[in-house]
Image (cartoon, rainbow, N blue to C red):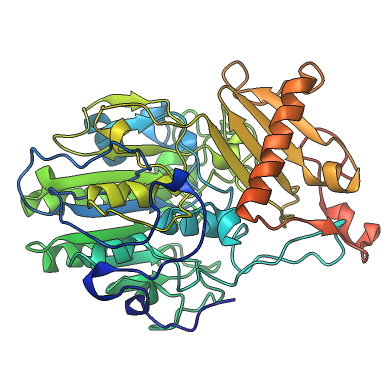
Length: 509
């Protein structure tokens, strides 16, 4: 049920306070809500992360000026579609420059294999299962499926405190340009509850998913428009602390880009490799070029040394259009190809250039990291993420060895509902049709270090480990109040099962 408030002011009281909510989480470090907010050293971030590390404090050896923050989020960009992960087909020189000047993360995950849940998690620091946003909004009900999906909220509730509101409460200018996808309606209506203006953003361009257009030169994905508005925002706020959230539609379907640019990629000798897609190559180049323009404008304004730049993707790539090697699966799947994503963070004077982390990172971590950077003392008690500050500044490792995932949904491309737990080197997938309906396998177990492609199921070889991980996964869902799937009394095999292929190796029907 949504609280009937229409703007961020309804959540922020005088002095930066936020009304307390009764929840559990984040090891009790943030027992209350926002009570004291201090400005920290300069920060300009292109997508930043943070956790609840008890000793994490913002750096103090920088000028006494607030950091600006730019958060750059790609849509459906695969782990293998950035140059710093080894591709020579896709050209991402500006993304790669950020990676070289900062830190890369080999075990960065999206909180969910589809867009809306990851975006909600990123904004709030809470796992999508806790938020009851575990599918793209509005999702699809599949009334004849074997299992029924759990109830979900229609958008990001207004009572949730967002990253943008943390910045705004400190006097930052806040801008959102691009895809939002945290409300039920595709059409953008300015000022409507659950839109960016209601969640802490002042300057907003919200673009919707492009339709299939005949003219590929029409900037169908708004990439150039998003860049232009971002540049204007930087110009207008060059003398003010700001938070810039750049959220592209690239490389979401439909695949549309200038044919001349696509021809460049079609002419490459490895264009026929399943990992490579020429039109995607053109789309990614356009996005990367815009990213470079943003970085150049920051440099022109003399802000580079006061800028944290973070690049991230909301989920894995689209397997039907481009193979996700070395991982299995893709978007809307709980396989690594659906949830392992690129992440790079550049923070001059704090993050060591060319550094790398193998810590387990997820979308939940952005909110508490930003809070640490801003020296926010108290946050909602049910934050799931951890501050990445000790990882970023090199003061310590992240106190985490387990990540949880919950995707209780069928997908129109034929993917099966599942949950997962990664603990250390191992990952267990729970197939809900198996555990709830007794159809097909219940679990699959993989050693991701030895088998990143998840091809060798170890559940029969290691039954005790599989059972332990399954119990932990179930206990976690209960702890955070995750919505569970249920048997569908209206299940009709011929009206549903024909659409679904089994993503765990057998016949789903």
